[in-house]
Length: 295
Ligand SMILES: [Cu+2]
Image 1 (cartoon, rainbow, N blue to C red):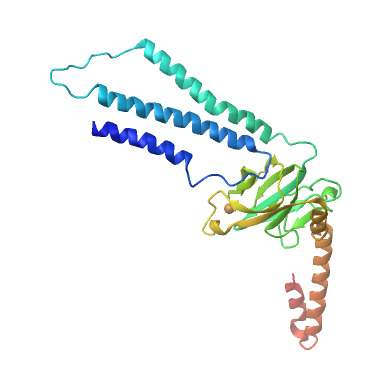
Image 2 (cartoon, helix red, strand yellow):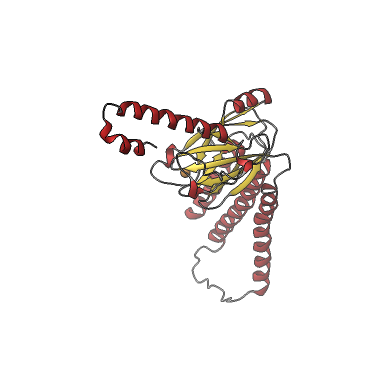
C-alpha cells in the first residue's frame, strides 16, 4: 500500500517537474527547430511509457496485495499479450527513430548557396578558414602543417591562394545565409557546438566531417567543445558573432589570406636573416652556423 503511494508520488512529481522545470533549452538561433521537435517527441514517447509502466505497477500493488489463502495463477505463456506488446514496442521504437532519420537527411543535404567554413580543432582551441573570392577552399592535409603553413594547405592548389585565415577563437557569420561547416582536427576528437544553433558534430583526425545550418538571429554565441578531449577540454571555448552584411564584410576584409600570410612570413624571415648577419659582423667565427639556425 505504502509502496503504491510512493510510486504515485513519483509519477505526479515527475510530471510537475517537467512542466515547471527550471532547466530548458536556450533560445534557438538557427533553422534547426526540427532538432527540438524530435527531442520533444522523445519526451512524449519516453514519458508516456514511463507513466504507463509506473501506473501499471501501482495497479498491481493494490490489486494483488497479500490476502490469506489466495494462490497465483500459473501462466507461462500468453500469445495474445506477447503479440500486442511486440507491436506496441515496435511502433514506439519506430516513432522514436524515424523522425531522426528525416532530420539527419536534411542535416547533411547542404543548400547550394551555403558559405563554406572550415573549423579546425586543436588541443585546445579553434581556428577557421573561409574561401576567398572563388568560393572554394583549397586542398589541405594535416601532414604538411608547419609554422609556414599553419593550415596544411596544398601550395600547388590555386583554390587555396585566396583562402582566408581566421587565426582566432572568434568566427563571424552572416545572418540568414546557410553555412556549411567542414570539421577538421589536428590531434584528437573534438566537437564544434553552439547550443543556440542546435547543431553539432565530431571533428575526427584524418577525415573531414560536415553539416549545415542557417543562423537567423544576430548576436554573440559561445562555442563549446562537446567531446572530452584532454585536460584543458573545459577551456576549449570560442565565440561566434552573427551579423548583417556590412559588419560581416568589414570583419572579412580584416582577415588574412593564405597569399598575404606567406608573403609576410617570407619578409619576416628575410628581416631576421639580415639582423643576424649584422649581429655577426663582430663575431665572424660563428656566422655561417647562426645563419642556418634561423627559421
Ligand atoms: Cu575539444
